[in-house]
Image (tube, rainbow, N blue to C red):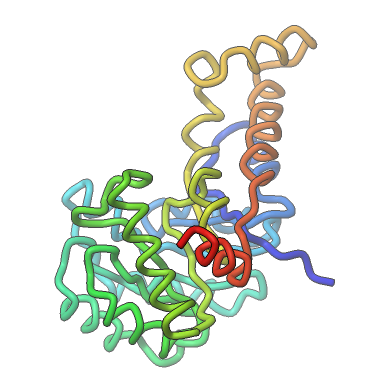
Length: 258
């Protein structure tokens, strides 16, 4: 039976000659951004599954504009690899629904089978339903008044969205949570998959993040590289110890809470 991959770790994850990244992605998923494709070859070779992000969110934060023709030209090199599970269709983070629908319409047909559109939480539930009726996988992106993950407002919107598609409409579209690989999110919503750069950000911060873990590894005589490898393994295990509820489990839980 094929292992179900829920957890996609964002790269690049530095350390050694790729040894830390290998620990992160082996037996798991890798989430590679078009803006930072440094470790895509490593990911395709070692991860169980790979997803490609279009880079729209980091580009938006940095004030950059992506040429989507260049994105699709680059994607063509990796599209047919057996480990590529899906990629995120180009989107406009703070754009209108028309802007994002236009980018979906511009998707070259040859890429459709592995494509996943983005529904931004500030967009209408009607658009979400339309996407879920058309695509087997849809990505949820936190945006607008719901840009901050795990606020009370954000949680209400997530519940509204899942209620709409899974309870009211009885759809079974797979949902990927962009930047939602957090146990406090993943454990509460029926996400099929989710990603984050938790490991990429926190593994190198040996003195700032979880310094007690660093001290324990050094006490064992680990080299600095082994410290990073050990931190990666421990933090990865903690992240992946949380799995999402199934759609049916979430529906039952929602009914009990009503």
